[in-house]
Figure 1 (cartoon, rainbow, N blue to C red):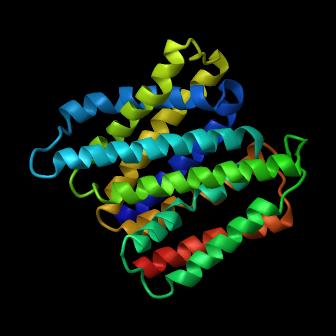
Figure 2: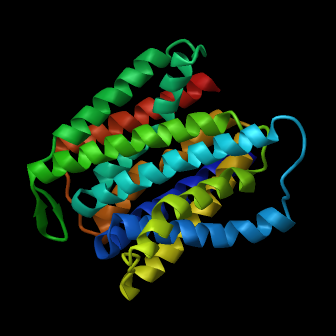
Length: 289
C-alpha cells in the first residue's frame, strides 16, 4: 500500500512542480529559478536533516554523501535544461520527455553490468519511439492562443532530452546511496551543490534577481520538490518498481493540467507519442516488479 500512496503523491508533487516551473522560468529565467528552488529546498531540509534525521555513522557514509552530491549536481544541471525548455516549449511535451529519466537510469544500469528483466528491451524501444513522436511531431502547438513554432518546439525537445539524461544519471547514482543515507541526506547535498554552483555565482555577479511575481511559484516548487523526493524515497524502500511507475505518471497529469490551465493544444502525433511513453514506462515497471 505504501508504494502506491507514495507513487501517487510523488506524481502529484512533480505535476505541481512542472506547472509552477513553467510559469516561474518564464518570469524569472531558468538560472534564477533554479537558484531560488535550491535555496528554498535547503532551508526546508537542513533543519530536519540535522535534528530529526541526523547523518548516520559507519563505513561508506562519506562516499555516499559525495555520490549524493554528484547526483545533486546532475539534478541541478537537469533543472537548468528543463526550465530553459519550459520557457519556450509545451509543458505536455517537456514533461513527457523528462519522465523518461527512469528508463535512462535503467539503460545506465545495463551499461554498468546490471541485467534487466526479460522484455525490457522492447519496452525501452516503445519509450524511445514515443519520445521521437512527441518531440518531432510538433509545429505550431498552441499555448494560451499563441503558436509555438516548429523550431522552438524542436529546441525545447532537445533541451528536455538533455534534462532527462542528467535526471537519469542522478537517479542511477542515487540508487547506489539510497540504502546508506536517509532520504533527507540524499536531498540535502544536491541543494547545497545547487546553491554553490548556481545561486552563489548569480549573487556575487548581481544577477540573482527574482521578480516578485515569480516568488510564490519558486517557493511552491521548492516545497513540492522536497515532498516529492521524500515520498518517492519512502515508497522505493518497499517497492521501487511500483513507486517509479506511478511517479512517472506526472507526465500525462502535467499534459492534461496544461491543456486545462494553459490552454495547450498538441498535434495528434504528439499525443500518440505521450501515450506510447506512458505505456512503455508502465510495462517497464511491471517487468521490474
